[in-house]
Image (cartoon, rainbow, N blue to C red):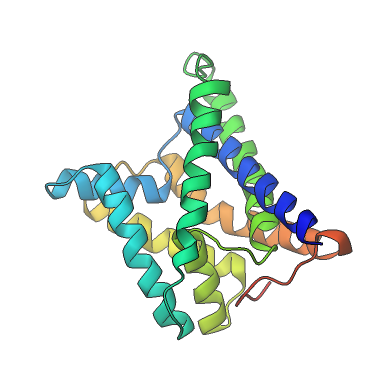
Length: 209
């Protein structure tokens, strides 16, 4: 069972960052977290990378408060894994593949497909109960604390982050808005599908599917 969960965890991450790469390549708009980090970087004297790291650390403590527990230090393991997987897709597999010359409708289609794929990856990944990155654990913690559905919690986080990013002048675009309202329902849809597959069903920590 541990082997299956580990495989599911890594496959979920791999799918998530395939989808993230497709989002980047579609050039429809930045994701909500990316928009926030860029907005912070433009408004305050630190780089996007610094704000990414600082935000992750802060969210570790926010999650601990929401769950009324200790900070989850293992959350930094998925951050490392995700950075490696993201680089693999973006800098190796898709390095010389560009969608900028595609018709807008085609790029929107790629973006929408990426959201569906991302929802599947997130559902696989969080159902293992293994350590999650702080930003992913945040909507799980909100789901647990306030008894929300996971999809609703993700949408709430995405909407809040996007509003702050917009106020800071971050690159909030069509893609950002689509992500806010569609990613959560996609995750919820796939959670219910995976919940019916006994081999893949592992109760997520502190979550309401």
